[in-house]
Length: 124
Length: 360
Length: 153
Image (cartoon, rainbow over all chains, first blue to last red):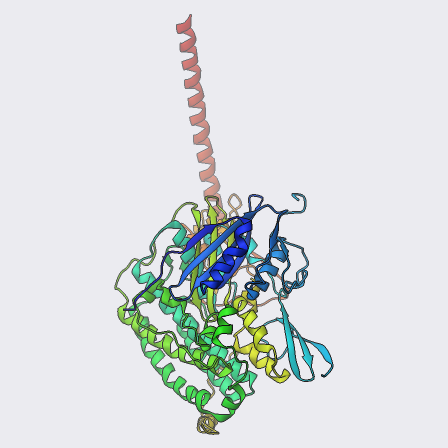
C-alpha cells in the first residue's frame, strides 16, 4: 500500500492590498501557481489564486473579494505564467486587472461577446 | 540580424488535432516568440451551471472533452461528494480507478499515434491506434460508450463490472502489453525516432516549476508530481511510483507517456486483484448542498483542478475546471522560443494539447 | 540504437488480414451495454415528466393528457440519464445508433387508442369522484356553518 500524504486544502481570505506580498511569499516558499479564477457571485467578484505544494500535495487558495469597479494589480510580474489566467478573468468576467505583462486586449479568447460570465450590462 | 516576420500557425494545420492559434514571430527560420490564442471552440460550459441542476451537470461536464471525458466527470463528482461530505462505496472507488486507467491508456495510445504521425512514421501511427481500438472495445463492453463513458454519478457509479468481464479485462490487457512491447522497442531504440525527438524543445526542471507545467510535461523535466499520489479513489491502496525522466526534451515526454501506459496496465492488474466483492456501488445524495471545494486529479494530460461553489440553491454558483493543457501553454511558449520552424508542429504535439478542454 | 527496428513487424503486416471490418457489408456488432438510442414502451408511460426534467440537453417533451412522448433524436446525447430516472422503467437503451438525416427532426410516440380511452375513462372517474368528494365536503361545511349559526342564536 502506498503512503498517502495529503493535508487538507487551505482557504485564506485576504484583502486586496495584501495580494502581491502574499503571492510573493508563496512563490518564495517554492509553491507553484496551480490555478487562478474569478467568480461573479451576488454582485461581487471572488478571485481565487491557488498555490500547490508539490511535495505534500497541499493546495493553498488565496481569496480576494472585490467590487466590480475595483482595480486589481496583476501578479504576472511575480508569477509570469499567470498571464493566461489573468487574461481569461479579464475577458470572460470583465475583472479590471492592471499591468498584465502580455495583455491580449480581448484577443485571447476569440469570442464575440465581451465578458459573457461577468455582470450584465444593465446591472453595471 | 534577419528580418522579423509573423507567421500565423493554426487554427487549421495538418499537425494540429484541434484548433489553437499561435502567432509565431520568426527571424529567418528561428522562432523568437510565440503568442497563443484560443477561443475558436469556446462553448461556455462553465456558464451552463445556471441552467442545469447538479446531477445533469455530470453529463454536461463529461462532454468537455472527447478523450479524457471520464476524468472530468469523475473529478466533478468527487468535488460534489466533498461538498456533500459523503464517502463513495469502496467497490465504486475501484471501478472508477479501473475505468480511469483504461481511459489513460487509450488517451496515451492516441497521443503516441499522433506523435508518430507528426514525425512522419505512418506505420507506427496505425499500430498505436490499432492497439487503442482494443482498449476502446474493453471500455465499450463495460460502460456502453467508446469515449464518453457516462457511468459516474454523484455518490458512486451507475454500472458494475461483472466478474467475467473483470477477468476478460485482466487477460486482454496482458495481450495489449505484449503488443506494446514491440512498439516500445521502436519508440525507444529506433534511431530515426531518436534523431527526430532528442534534444528538441527542452524545458529544464526550474523552468517547468516556474511555468507551472503539469502532468507528463512536468514529469519529463524531472518534477516528481503526480496527483494520483494524493490518494483519491482507490489510488491510496495501489502501489506505484510516478514515472520521471530528466532530459525534459520531446523524447523524455514521449518516454514518460509510453511508460505510463505500462504503469496503467500494472495498476489495473492491482485494482482487479484488490477489488472488494460488494454489491453497493453508489449511495444516494439528496438536496442542494452549501459549500465550496477544490479537487485535483491526474488526467492523462496532467493535473486538472475542479472548483465548485454551491450555496444551497438548485443551481450551483460557480464551476471551474482548470484543464492540464491550460497549465502547459506557458511551457509551450517557452519551448517554442528559439526553435526551428520545422520543429514547431512536433513541440505543439508533445504537450498533448486538448484545446476543447482548454476552452470548455 | 539502430535503424529499421520496426522493419520485421512492418513486413509481417503485409501478410496479416486487415484488423478493420468492412462495415456496410458486415454488420456492426454492438456490446451488450452499448448506448445507442432511447426507445420507449409508450403504453407503459405514465407521463410523469421525470425524463424531461432529467434530460441535460432538453431533447424530450411529454404531453400527459394527449399521451404523447416526443424526442428530438438529434439533440439527444445518449447519456442514459432518463432511462436511469424513469419510475416505470418504460424507457430503454437500444444497441443500434440513430441514422443520420439531412435535418434535425422530432419523433413523437402516441399511446394506442385503447390505452388512451382507458386513461380518459379513469380520468373522468377520478374527476367525478373528486367532484363528489368536493360536494360532500361543501355540504358538510354548510351543515357545520348552519349548526354554528344555530348555536350562536
